[in-house]
Picture (cartoon, one colour):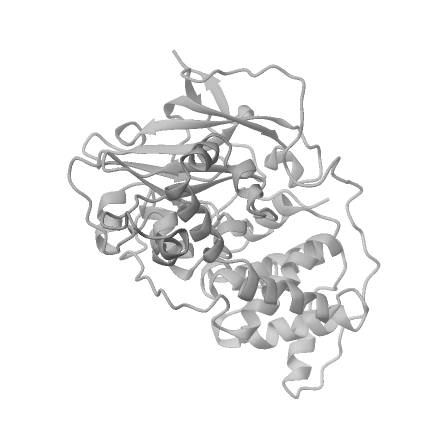
Length: 227
Length: 198
């Protein structure tokens, strides 16, 4: 099983400052501006299957990257490093194999580690995709006030830190889905209801924040009733 | 990564990607032609032209528009649009009263079947971090100035729900055909960082 590591470092960046000016839109941008980006995209999709993992494990494999690996080579850079993490976790490739092969492609002459015996997780999803049919009644209803919990447990989560501890209102009852927090670690699907919750910007940030509404789709386990 | 590499001995990404591809292909674990197919699909077939068709149909067919707002996933499937990152679609409508804008602060979740793969600006840390804190300022910096009395609603993806913006139909397009309307609709308007202009 994947070693459980802190949920996310740099990836959970909602509400953070320090990232500079908003980006400039390039309407003519290529889908893959560099050829390797397309190869990395395809390799990552295939690595999820090869490693016996899943989309949530892949997201966690990226969230485990340090800032340099997450940011410096862009979106498909982190996809490639994330894919490598999955392949290393399941021992599809040996530590150091990619670096050694890269050195040899570049004209070097270094020993490459042999392919290891794979150790894929003993875990399979009960169905394709993330949506599940469940019988459990919904804990919350549209219009109800809820608080996003504070998550301190190590491991994967999709509860953004900027929402944690804040109160909002359920606005949409969404379909039941597998819980990323356990699915990413091959523990259980924990299929459960999801709710889009609406927060006032001044509840999330400070009184003098811009005035707007923030909606986000949160799993039932992330929420508790608020009065 | 467990192996600490300093920036100076960083392997260029084209080389690193080629190395991983070689390692997997030579053991028969990956078929390069399957990789080619994935790449070509998102370069040629699945992109914002899909979303533009949906928007143009919604602008010209009130019943379709109602189905789209009630059950986005089902409505776009009528046009053949489904697939990865399109399990459950929620469509939100822009008006002069409310402007919707979509982000995924945690990664870069995006409705692939309608818009293809996300553009650079959507994946930019400045967009991801700031649009949930100061959307009006971010939209201004990106060239969209909204009237002061237009309310802003930001949608941040956490689960597999994908959000899609139905932009406002521009005035002066009353006589446009569906195809002419589709040609006006940009990717950026369907995420909510731009409006559609005639």
